[in-house]
Length: 315
Image 1 (cartoon, rainbow, N blue to C red):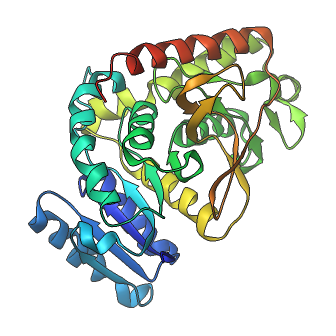
Image 2 (cartoon, helix red, strand yellow; image 1 turned 180 degrees about the vertical axis):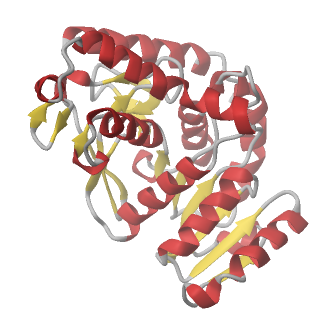
């Protein structure tokens, strides 16, 4: 039987180690096991994080092997090749699919009851690969999807409008990547439609403002990678937020990537992000929010981009 107070992180690169640190600070778990192909790296990260324990609480953090997954309630998968400058997330497909062909059977050998949280890129493709290789129910295979992208959108909107980003309600949906889209038609600030709030703040060229802000969000990962080589703090906090929703059974709504099969948005046979209720059992319900004509077409284009890659996979 698995315990939701035990988490495993597979992959101890920048994203994995930052996620482990964020999860330690969250105090959501009593036990966190780190697994990496480089055992010394996992041990070093576990030691480093553990040395801050006197300021947080008593959490058992250690480097382990796949057999240590047997009772983990949540397994966070961050392993894989990182995105290099000038490389798109979809460019990573072939390298990381081969890595997942080794990782997923190693997980299912010891644990068939956990929730699998896929973070590695391209996350939508690898969420699909994880679902197919694991044989898990689709409710228990979740990709981090556009959770971080949506946080970035809230941040840039909050900064632009000089309001607390917590008061901004807006989503990025579709692929976590170049074909993603912002749902401007339902974006709002504490119930006030975003176009009306632009007017209140003295911004009248709505379409141009929305385009500039969206471009900033969509290109932010490339900008960060060009400057420091990798992104990891933002996604680490997104992992923490997702785990919090699961462990606390919050039934919060987040745009996670999950499998769609002729049930929502005319999507079928792929994983991508749309607003979803997340709780103790993983995916509780996928929500079909209203989209305008432009947004519907953009979502279909995003789906086509992902499906063309999926159709080429050798699984």
